[in-house]
Length: 231
Ligand code: MN
Image 1 (cartoon, protein in one colour):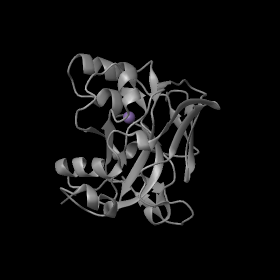
Image 2 (cartoon, rainbow, N blue to C red):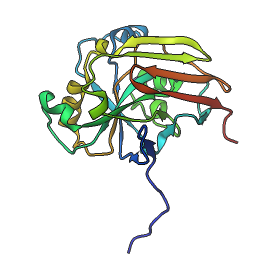
Image 3 (cartoon, rainbow, N blue to C red):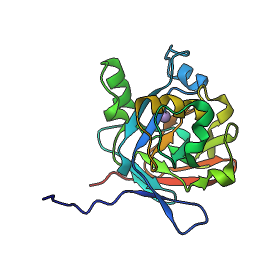
């Protein structure tokens, strides 16, 4: 016998369609733009990509709000391209990687920067800094059949209309295909998985009342408001 709970997977709308994408896992790539590695004063610029996860129910849809999280006084945004997986695979070769891509969206890797640095400095896992409720806003997905095999595209993040991050995914150290190759060497990827591909320079704090917009060429805008903490 199994006790069944009422939990339903979080879903991301597919742009222009009635159906949504149910999320299984959220993987994130650390340190994937040189300018961000340098602003974080981290020296391992040639290392292979590394990965961490967020809980699948951390997804927040565009047009809604994110309560300011507990246990931090330094909530920061990281605008990132998100890749949605649509086909199972492990040990995927880079040349086959796009076959496994369902589509793309825009995401924010929300970070408790104070907790992240504390974990880093104590050589502890990043969970407290990265893996918390509401930490993965994600905009509507566009299918790969429409968007293609993405290797370029401008990514811009604005807070209250002011540009904070402006880059291009062609500047990622590890592109979409390489990320999938490396990640699938560690985990079996399944339909429903989402990969946040890393952030460029310009990360910074937000406070309740701030509006974060992220835009990427060809994808629907992601917009969330930071709300007061939950009481
Ligand atoms: Mn990130």
